[in-house]
Amino acid sequence: MVRITKCVNNFFYKPIRLMEKAGSKTAGGGTPKPLPIEVRMVPKYLELATYRGKDRFNHEEINEITKLVQERKSRGISPTDLVKNLLDIGKDNGNILSAKEIKDFFEVTSAGYGKQEQSKLLRFMKSLKEGQKPAQKSLFGVLSDNKSFCEGKPNSTSDYVSFNNRLLTKAISKSEKPETLARVFEITGSIHNELLDVEYATEFVNHLTELYTKTKKPALLLDFNRVFCSWEVEQILAKMKEPGYKLPEYKFPLTKPDYANSSLRKHAEITKQQKEVLDYLGLKGKVTLVGFYREYVDAMSSKVLRKGNFEGGKKR
Image (cartoon, rainbow, N blue to C red):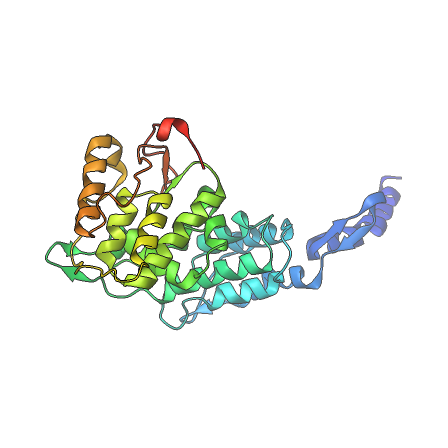
């Protein structure tokens, strides 16, 4: 009797197990529903991916990435096209994406990202990995707050595109110029996003991108990122666009580096540095300082750096 039961079980359940192993989902009523072909092809692309004669991913990494793709809810670019794009990034200059960087991309974009947003993230990641330039040195050292960049290490996209940095990731996906934004982050290393909403973070990265596009001055970009908020940068940009305005020579930052321990800095010190920058730009008294002593998150660690209020808690 036991032998007959075993034979019956094998007859009915073995095909189902094989379909599940091949990558199928069970629909209502227990009917196996094969995964779309573009999803089933993902592990094949990962298995065949090599770099300098070696496999790029081990079995565990392939399973983890495949699972993230299978659970994906975002539509737009097909999973196979996404994988092919991600595998191609950095191949020409030897700065390919790691398994972690690819997993972070699929994890953070699992839901809520359309085709255009996914495309902008891919453009940003490609530029960050392939466009890193030699650190520009000055009398004050390297003009960058990006520690990896200063040390000559390749940038990691996980510092910007990951679930831990999901607010920043969403802002990047709405960026007006993803490639230029990658250069901005190469210089600034991180931005201080107020913990308000994605709209603010998007405005800030777009303002910094516009500033760098207009001036191409790393020192100026560092000053603006260190001590001004988005609305202040917006005001300054408007003044720079006025007829007759001439930007002074700007080789060295006027502000101090703004690392994680800057939470110990006082509001008065930041305000003093703001006024020094505005005075140098010839804009003293022409820009309303809305306040900088607010709640910020570091893009590299997602840790809150400062707390406080601005204009009595007023928000735009």
